[in-house]
Length: 168
Image 1 (cartoon, rainbow, N blue to C red):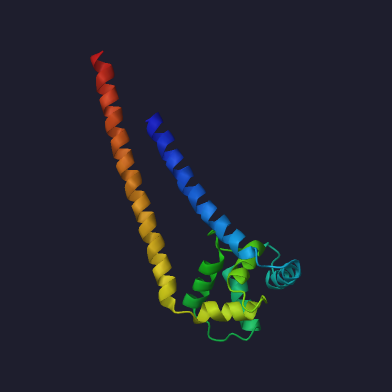
Image 2: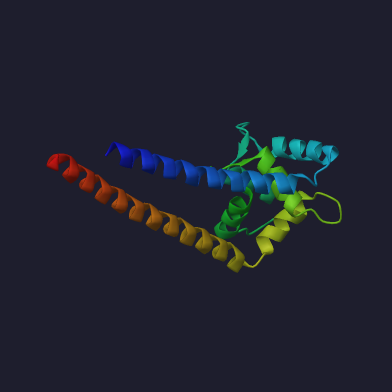
């Protein structure tokens, strides 16, 4: 049982690290195109949107920000797609660095534009959002299946070791 717990813990750590590395890589790649002046603009925008001063933009703050920018009739599905696109660490909030990364990914003609970025995300074909969600669910299910198989193998090894010990 001790070995099984250690292996399960190790597998969980590997999965967590892989997801964290992916998020860090996406953040790093997309923030490389942002200039120091653009970072200042983004910080100012972030402070305006972050009305509760928590350091993270939740879905309600994003909804208010979009309304203030003139986006009317934004559906919950579109808002969730925007949050999904921007929230790289999956904690349900968009931190300033995640906003920088989002704007960096959609930067056009050498200029960062929050309104244009939001418009692109909201008007994109929702199939893209669904496809990403399905792909991630499939990957998670595959990892879960591998984990279950590994647990079964470790359990059998433990049983074999116990039988061998009893025979001695």
